[in-house]
Length: 110
Length: 120
Image 1 (cartoon, rainbow over the protein chains, first blue to last red):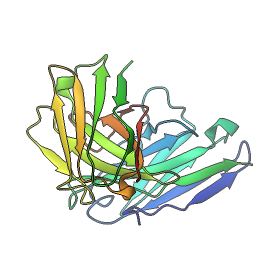
Image 2: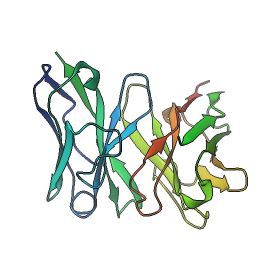
Image 3: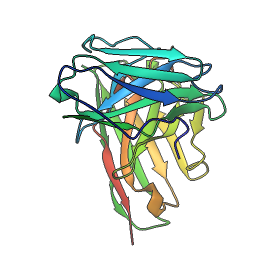
Image 4: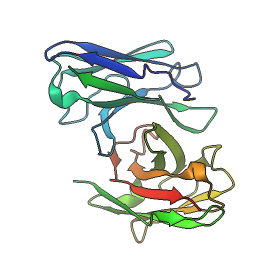
């Protein structure tokens, strides 16, 4: 049982816009920045979005993040086949003194 | 480009010990807090432990507290995870990851991981 709640799966067709939600509480998302990670099949996770909506260098602007209250969202526009991956939200949790992760969302590009 | 290379994984019997290493290069290791994160087969990510850049602060997930110890040797640019009293549920790929000193929650670079299998 993950501290942050994500839908287990999402899907879309090439070119579509897909959103993935992440729900937490006041001790994590409600008071801390949200980060998103992309894990392509068989590889290590990679930072995709940080500080709720910032993209590291090299991440396409098709990826965007937002936060409101104790929830956050990742949006992927212009969906491409190479976006097929697992996506994880995460945020620091003061009660844990460490980051907590969502259970992950497996994105399928149909 | 930042490089993190984990090693030390393998098959170990329950209740035995194992030490993982993470060799860092191409950045000033002593300036960055470091994490261990694990991923059980077919499961999601689970944070394990964090150590501050100078080693003065460290925190653990409840699931490993009292059994695992994170440490670092800044002179060798290496992060460690000493794992004692291993259980079957500790079976996972273990990743080391870096955080900027300004944001411990942001894991901006990850290693490729090392697999630990706890089995009799």
